[in-house]
Image (cartoon, rainbow, N blue to C red; front, top):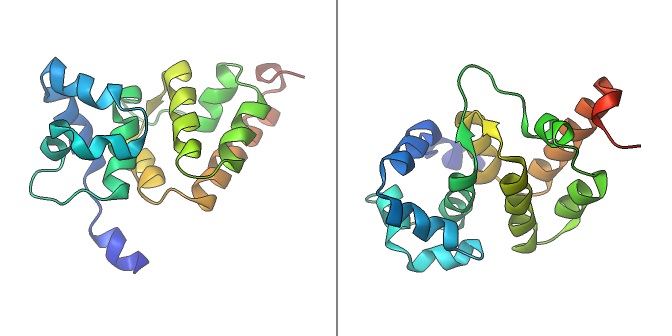
Length: 155
């Protein structure tokens, strides 16, 4: 099943470009969603994924799409950006320990605060396969960045 899902991955960079090409009202539909399931009734979701029957994976990606810009080159991972914006470890762990859909809602709040520049090819996969391993990756990246740069984290 996991291999089948990888084969069917959307092109997340192209998806971000499709979002950027939307008219402002369509982008606003995605930004206004309170939780991922709210996107099921927004036409913008179906414009993002033409010809597809969007499932929870599509909704997770669309839920974060407005808040994370596509970077040029190799932008720092999300965990390092959390450290650079002085996000507390309590907030990061809160996301990691939360269950669906609260985990993704809290993750989006972090993204709104941090305004991250991401590599959508990688970040999109993190959201597509969202679960305990994705959350662990964010926590690990956060701590690796924090201890590699002691001035970046709060003590």
